Length: 283
Image (cartoon, helix red, strand yellow):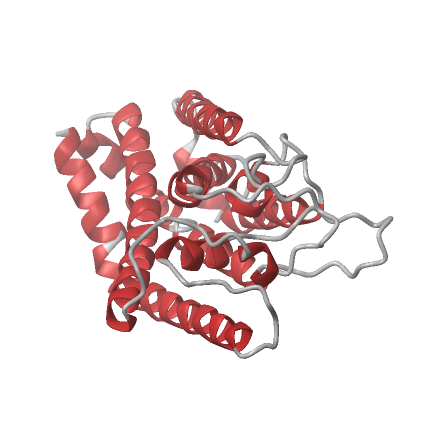
């Protein structure tokens, strides 16, 4: 019964909305083209610092985020538009399906699914599958583009990649050779935690308000570097393996798993006494 329900959620909640998948594909193509143009522009500069492009450099550039903002330094806060766009789009894609499924089917779907626990667990796994698929599409686009252009499929980072990322020269840069954990694992893991938290919040408030909370959390993470703001762990440029005062990626894994687990349990406990009929009338 559970796997039948999960299969239904993936079919209706993901593949029936194929236009969203196409939008994700187009989004990552545009993001890659922006990255390609930046590497190309940097190569034309008269500078002794060279940055040889690799798959790792490309992924780092796209998912990097921004450095910690220091108002004491006379520099302008640079809004990480690409970073915010990717994660806000992903958060929006998982926003309404559980809410609409419950509103449209109500108690009938709960009876067919075998109970509230199975329904909630299936929706959480659907959420996780959506996040993983989002990143898989992105990785496939980027890897395919690298293959077409003959860019090495290596996660090795160029020593001067900080120059392309426009990091402050005064920053204590550590010149890592690779950041696979920060680039490949933490971004999807962080977004799984954020999306599960958003879905749980939607039990207490309308989905649009939980989405606003997600946006504020991500925005605050760009402005403040703190181990308690989860968005920091989805910025490889803030890793303690990249800058001396960065956030620890291992703590990021534990923090993300903890947030995801708490969100699941809080949502499950609350949903067991969730008044579906009253919520339906309010909407």
